[in-house]
Image (cartoon, rainbow, N blue to C red; front, side):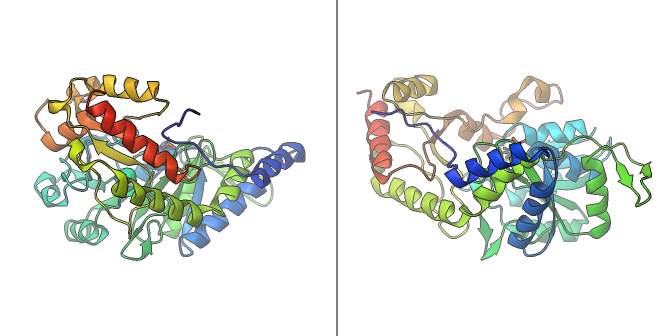
Length: 372
Ligand SMILES: *Cc1c(COP(=O)(O)O)cnc(C)c1O
């Protein structure tokens, strides 16, 4: 049987031909395709300003710059994310202040945020884990009352929504990733959605060396921008992907539903929150019942691999990494994040999967846990 990876992008032939056209056009870096992608994204996000980026990490770095996060500031975030989330805070010279996650959503626990706010807190940086949105009503209520900026790490949220509103179509600064594994991809890439015209202008400058061009051919530089622009080669992939976004999300939701229907509920695994209204099902993550298994997580992943099924780990709790231990974080600080981070596995879920693949994964998981 063919190996089933935990994810695989769906790129159609029209997109492949479109990329070839860009390559033959004589202009392969940021140009007409990147512009068009920004326009189509802006339409998708209800007319808000969008700037395409070479990565989701770049979008987050620029968002922190736009929000004015400075050395000495504190930024409140979750300990359970891809490490880019906390690294960008450190790279801005600020301190990541972790707040434990909620056991059910696996997202930052909004109940605990206010206790972590200090006079140095500048921004909240929540993550929509696996594309399950953080409660935007409560999030923005806290931000408004406490005078804080919000940088949404919506890297995984393309296609997700909150109470009928698309993630990215409202809120403060929203950073999205188009990494190869995300629901919409450009290979590598991302975008930042903004709410303010002056900040959009600053974002444009921070994206590419700070250069502002005048009609007479002159140039001016007032901020030291970086290099985060998206190539037309990548943008052309994104244009081909956007057309399928709705179908991708529908398909992912259907496959997730099948997991819930077919999963062996006696296995002891903890399944994700069953949310079909808001979640885009970026990943399907279960917590292994390690205490009653004869193998550890590594053994489980290897055994699944031998059965021809790819399994991922997203993610170990970040505060346990050496870099973050040096900031004074210790094991035991965030029990939910640690428990989830050490037991989580990502099972295959992507639009190109067949329903029968889900059944195959469910059988393999149940048998592997039983030690068969
Ligand atoms: C993917 C991801 C990022 C980074 O996006 P890149 O495009 O890989 O730079 C940041 N945060 C989270 C939660 C992600 O999943």
